[in-house]
Amino acid sequence: MSNMQRKMGTFALTMTGIGSIIGSGWLFGAWKAAQIAGPAAIFSWVIGMVVILTIALSYAELGAMFPQAGGMVKYPQYSHGSFIGFLAAWANWISIASTITVEAIASVQYMSTWPWKWARWTRELVDNGILTSEGLAVASLLLFVYFFVNYWTVNLFAKANSFITIVKLIIPGLTAGALFFAGFHSGNFSSEHGVAPYGWASVLTAVATSGIVFAFNGFQSPVNMAGEAKSPNKSIPVAVIGSIFIAGIVYIILQIVFIGAVSPSSIADGWNHLNFNSPFADLAIALGINWLTIVLYADAFVSPSGTGATYTATTSRMLYGMQQNGYLPKIFGTLHPLYNVPRPAMWLNLAACFLFLFLFRGWGVLAEVISVATLISYIMGPVALITLRKTASHFYRPFYLKGASVIAPCGFVFASLTLYWARWPLTGEVIFIMAIGLPVYFYYQAKNKWAGFKKEFLTGAWMLIYLACMIFISYIGSEKFGGKNILPFGWDMLVIACVSLAFYYWGIKSGKSNRYMKEAEQINQENFKSK
Image 1 (cartoon, helix red, strand yellow):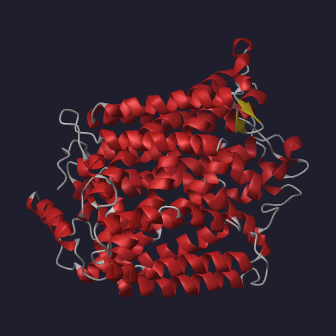
Image 2 (image 1 turned 45 degrees about the vertical axis):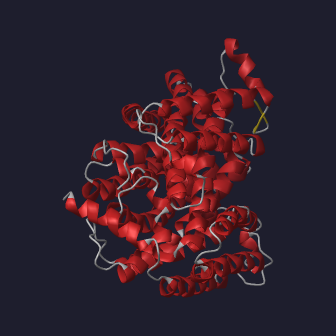
């Protein structure tokens, strides 16, 4: 077991999950989804919740089985060895570390539309959705705030996050209620543009690119914090599943209210012309709800900052886990003797956050990149779950997922479909970003004199071929998803489903007992002894 002390109960872990999920996604997601899919965006949130839930259920069993810090970068290594473990860990780290940056950007973007005379200077922070030099400075300051909230012990993080999360649940509720009673136009759902004005393909695209997958990404925070759980057998599944359901209900209600609160004149030319800098705050101003405007501008700091602080904590544990896997220098696996947090890992994450900040200066662009990287990192969960049931059937499983033989392949197929829905060329671009991490892996393999490299590379070869196939199908796929339309709409998704199922079973067949199983068994047995 990790020598990090267990200090977080079920409530704190659930608050961690909700705190991660309800961030800038609720401030921007409803607007972006409505812009892409119109009123049918409601279905996008439902689909997104189902997709994430099928994936998260696999991780709930794995998290309870191996309650360790940064667990999500460990499971693929236990099931398939170091090569595929690195690919999954790299994609997961990029998706989570960049989320810290996108939350800071979200706060600054809301700040840029402050309507008060004394705050005119804030309008210089953002220009056409992109942070200016002044905006970058404010966002940088926020990154330091997230950093230092977690620099001194897990206890401070847990206390601060639980309080912030409660606030984050109250404010969306107040927003939904106020907008509903102040001005709800039911005709917006059945206007001349129809429920799905841009076709049902746009509903699917909204799942992948409007921030929906990105918004639900926080479910993995309780899994990565499993090393601090008091009772992982109970806490992990409850925190993971509970946070998805609670946040999902909040998001769906907000989407319904947003669609109804928009003035019919604003969508006269179509939902795709709906343009807001601070979506819910702009609606509150238009409806004359001044108290809500103030609350929303305040929450534009609280919600993203809570998520940013949460992810600052969880990403340091991910790097800690990657170091334990042998992918990073030993210093990143060092815990502070007094505060018990991996400070060197935190510093590395902070540097990465600044890199993302200066490369991607807008919420929308970075949210799209994060969503695709997230999906790639999720893909290994269902495969690892079923593989470990084969290679580690004797391990203690505090939470046993019933129906995993159906849920796991559905999770893999749903993740593959959502990756495709993200549209070409975004799918290819982000998969290319994933490949940038390979030199790091090869460096440490060379340092270890390529011990076991051939065997573990072949064990993970299916993943490389899978990603190449996804790029190819995305390129030749339907024009509705940015492709060349060689594979028409409808047939494209059937092909994705069949191909991904084939790779799912190939992945399971490739999984074999490897050199990391001893470590996995030790962690699992220590968990068993404590029950």
